[in-house]
Image 1 (tube, rainbow, N blue to C red):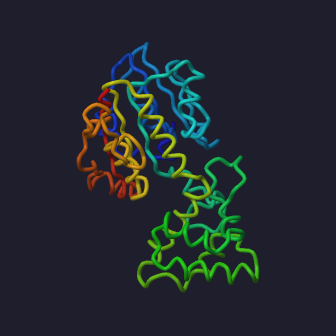
Image 2 (tube, rainbow, N blue to C red):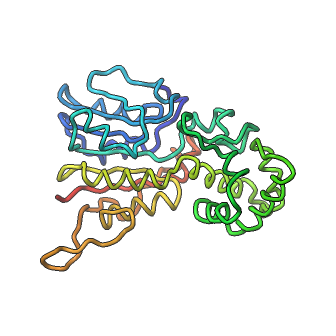
Image 3 (cartoon, rainbow, N blue to C red):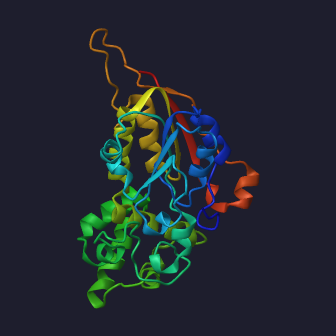
Length: 303
């Protein structure tokens, strides 16, 4: 387990709110550098079990040497099926840190970061075929505009896409610097970094199908948790946070209230233990700037 790979965010708050039972079964949806997992294991006895998911081959190198621990090298959208293969149909707690790991941002060739010039890749699972380069060069304009509006919340998406389309007709947009150059005049004054971060976020979400995967995962979390089980999720942007809030409030990612069949009243799936999100303090943000946008939400399964 390497802190250089990824510094766990809101670590103590996550462990405290998981309400770990020593002999329980827990899931870390986003293993990364193993920081959260290592601390969960400290609270488990010999009967306790921890299953972790990560589709990134680099993360799989951080596997923890512990008989109670199993790393499943898959996207968490396949949570239920892969747990069933392990003989698990119910769990006592699920933790998800939805942020991109520091390692992925810091590895220049992965193409996640605006800091480096590298090929536009952004695949978390490098066996997948779709890359950011393909999206930028091959998606039709309408699809690109929708992508940047929805996943990047970019106000001038039409202008952005027009620049991309005009440029790609002349030559292929291959690297992060190519893209930055093409869209340079779309960037608001004094907000270049923030704007580029939104553009890269939108591409990364599309490459990895992050919203679809999260919806599928959260739906399965509802089914997997035992009564009294805890769902603990850290999100980093409003799209993720909305889905987490919806699942806690209504038991589904769409936020559609489920009515009780007999009484016609709203049927509660979760007890919300964090009406306001839990945020990192100034000291944590100072030590780990990537924690600044983190929001932790906690819920307890009611039935």
